[in-house]
Every structure is written in structure tokens, then in C-alpha cells.
Amino acid sequence: TLTLKDAFEGKFFIGTALNLDQIWERDAAAVAVVKKHFNSIVAENCMKSMFLQPQEGVFDFKDADRFVLFGEKNKMQIIGHTLIWHSQTPDWFFVDKNGKEVSRDVLIARMRKHIHTVVSRYKGRVHGWDVVNEAILDNGEWRKSKFYDIIGPQFIELAFKFAHEADPNAELYYNDYSTAVPEKRKGIIKMIRQVKAAGGRVSGIGMQEHNALDNPPIDEVEKTILGFAGLDAKVMVTEMDITVLPHARPNMGAEIGEQYAYTKEMNPYEKGLPTAKMDELGRRYVAFFKLYLKHQDKISRVTLWGVGDGDSWKNGWPIPGRTDYPLLFDRNYQPKPFLKDITSLT
Ligand code: XIL
Image (tube, rainbow, N blue to C red; front, top):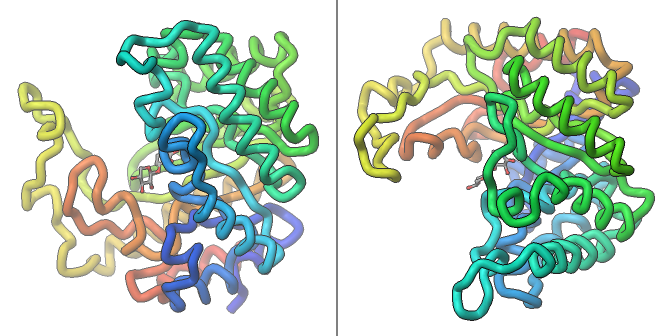
């Protein structure tokens, strides 16, 4: 059977997120699958600001350097993730030495320094950057992040400006989840229009695609592809997975951190995924890939958020300690039975 990257050659890149065991090639079975099936990579964590600049002015590029080298050695498209995000940003970013919140000017200067240092280090080597991640809420309004609160909505165009200064040839992306929610789609489109009108160079928009078996509806995803492409931007699938587990519902009244506490009913497939569920997962993946193929003129890349099921963040989020099956390869890095249904679509 065809490999993923061969099946979609000339249509879109097929990517995967890499964790540290894969970046450092400590996990031979995973690395073999990465080399065989994927032609684009993104770092799952090691290019986030809490790892690249844990303290002000103290940069640590050890893992990120190795990640970029891995991509170059294997002639892969290399994606940087992510420059500005409300999450996994070190606390020092927003406060001064006395713990007092910094001024707008100081935060802008910190953003500039972080983006310039990181993007210029990999200039000409990283193909594209997720410049801003998750700035809009599901209701279409601005997320009230520290960046938004302190700088205002302009933080987005500034981030794109700084990234463009550091590597004028890199592609620059806005990236978000639940982009098929109509209100959110509209909010993102409105925001990107504003950023573009202010001169921000947005080359692409990433749909994370952390999906479930029953959500989102395929036709809403299609509306999002068309809406984003209408902004004169490349559209890409940046973090795809499909959870098979029951939806987490917050336990109202619980403490933050215990809101999604583990219960046995929420972890039904600890001993293995029943064949019927596997088939359902396969049909769901095929439906998404069919949609992406239909819009191959607009979609430049489809990236999975991990290689094998054991690597997936979904085993730990939003409920810790579950056993999920959201990816294309199982815990032993064997292709799932439906992989051939995906590779035979082309
Ligand atoms: C996740 C990683 O997969 C986890 O290992 C980490 O603990 C938290 O972040 N949206 C994003 C990704 O843009 O960076 C997140 O990755 C998943 C949601």
C-alpha cells in the first residue's frame, strides 16, 4: 500500500507533530513511521515560549535546533509552532521584577525580542510559523489573554510585523481550534481582515482540527475552508486528531483542576478499541480527507497531532489518565486498518 506522503504527493503536504523522543530519535519505531509517511513536521512543544525563553533573555534552543536538523536531514517541510499564545508562555513575560504587570510598551518590546530572536535563528530553514495561536473565542469575541488585555487587539498585527521583519520569506499563519463553529469562523475572518487592512502579512490560516466522531459537521468545516480561502490565505489542517472518547463535561462547582476529574465511565476503551468503533473512526477520517481533497487547490498541508495513539495529548486532556485512539497509527506504530482507505482516495 501507498504511504501517506506518496498518496497525497502534489496535492498537500502530510505532516505530523514530533515529541522529544522522536526529535532526538530515541524512539526508533516512531521515527521509522515519521520518515516513511510524512513530509512535514511541527514541534509539539519545544518551540513554545516557555521552553525557548524560560527566563527573560535566557534562550534554550537545544531541542528546537535538533528538531530543525531532523527536518533538514529528511528533506521535510519544517513548521514552527508557536510564537504568541496565551498558554505555555512563561509567567515572567507579563510582569516586572516586583511581580507588577508590565506596561504595553514593555510587553510589545518583549514580544519583539522573542519573535526576532526565534524567527531569525531559523531564517530560511523554517518554512512557516504559527505566529499567533488561539486569539478568538468560540463566540467570535477576542480571548481576554494577557496579550490582549495589556496591548489590545493590535498585538496580532504587531506579532505578524515582527515575524515578517525577522524572516521576510517565511510563511506566517494564524492558527486556531473549533474553526468550524459559525460564530468563531466569523470572528476569525473579521479579525484577519482587520490585521490585513493594517498591513499584517498573514499567508495562511490553520484549522487545528481537534475533532470528535460526531463533531464538527463536515459541511461546517467546508464553509470554514471556503471562508478562510476567501481571505486570500492558504488554508491548512495543523493539528488533526479525532477522539473516540465521551465528551468531557465540566463538573460544575468543582475546583479548577478537578473540573475534569477521571471517572471510569469516561474511559471506556482502556482494554482496546472495539472493531465497530475503529470502523467508525476510519469512516470519519475518510470523510475529512475527502473534503480536504475536494479543496486541494486551497489546502496546502494536513498535519496530524502526533504519530501513534500512545503519543497523543488526548490521553491526558481534558481528563487525565484516559486511553484514546485519535491518530492514524496505534500504540505499536502499526498503521490502523483504515489507513489504506485514506491512501487509496487519490
Ligand atoms: C499540546 C501538546 O500536545 C501537549 O503535549 C501540551 O502539554 C499542551 O499542548 N492546541 C495547540 C497545541 O496549539 O500546541 C496543543 O499542544 C494542543 C492544542
